[in-house]
Amino acid sequence: MGTIVTFIVNSILLGIGLAMDAFSVSLANGLNAPKLTRGMRAAIPLTFAVFQFFMPLIGWICVRGIEEAFTAFQKIVPWIALALLLLIGIKMIIEGIRRKSGNGGDDNETAVLKPHTLLVQGIATSIDALSVGFTIADYRFGRALASCLIIGAVTFVICFIGLRLGQRFGTRLTWKASVLGGIILICIGIEIFITGLLGL
Image 1 (spheres, rainbow, N blue to C red):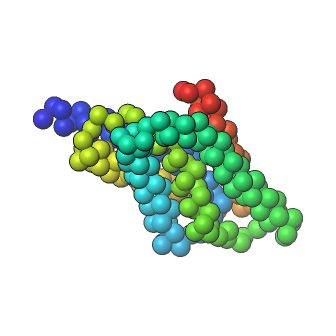
Image 2 (cartoon, helix red, strand yellow):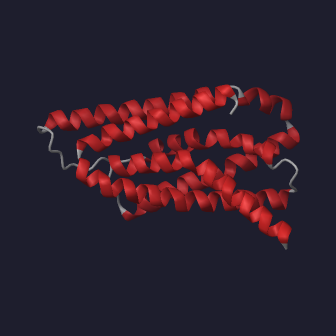
Image 3 (cartoon, rainbow, N blue to C red):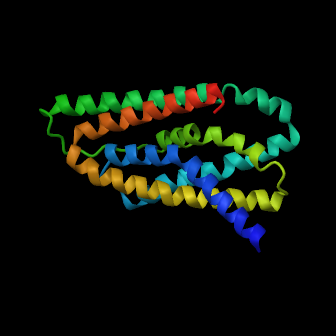
């Protein structure tokens, strides 16, 4: 019984740690597009949860089968995350500035989060979770799958909270919210890059 509890607690803590970048991006999404449809409000945390579920599982499979190639790929992961989040962040900042200049700074238009942008965010924030494959390498498939499911569930809850917080503040900040969201994404990209480069 104690072993099961320890396993669940460890998986939850792992999920919380992995979900922090996705939480920040969800917050940025809420700031940028405070009037999302109900479907998108569910799709955003679900996307991050699915990626955070699959990436550690893929990492586990890679560690079990192609460890040498996987280790080599890990070296470019920080660069990929940085590039993706920089692109999206800069785009959000430019859109925010355009919205301001479009009608004197009082913009009530709703930004639209496109599905392909959300997918890129999901990849960028979860790609470093591949390394969790090393952490759970000793698990059998059933236990690894259960751990990844817990990680995904935790990510969903955390990202949903981040999105709702962003929406609440985004309606008050108008165009500034888009700029702030872009800055947050850039900062996350730099954080992932530096952490990955230093091996922290």
